[in-house]
Amino acid sequence: MCPRCKSLEVTRSRSRFRDTIMLWLGLKPYRCRECNKRFHLPAKVDRVLRRERALRIAAKERASDVPVSDGLDPFK
Image (tube, rainbow, N blue to C red; front, side, top):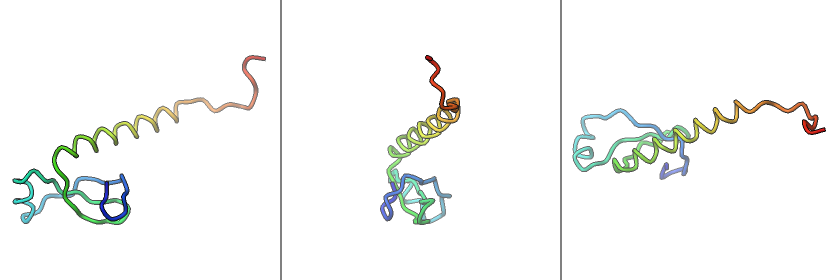
């Protein structure tokens, strides 16, 4: 979650040379897709974010697989 705008739309950011110390401390760089803020999160959070993203994608796919109703009651 972005510390600035609280969005869940965050992605891993490219590691830079100055991130080396942060990586040694177990912090990975991220960037918010909404406000473009760059920040660091613990590596454990990476697994949680990947799981949440996978669940959101699966939910979108399931929603697109649901047939659109024509408004008629199928049990009549």
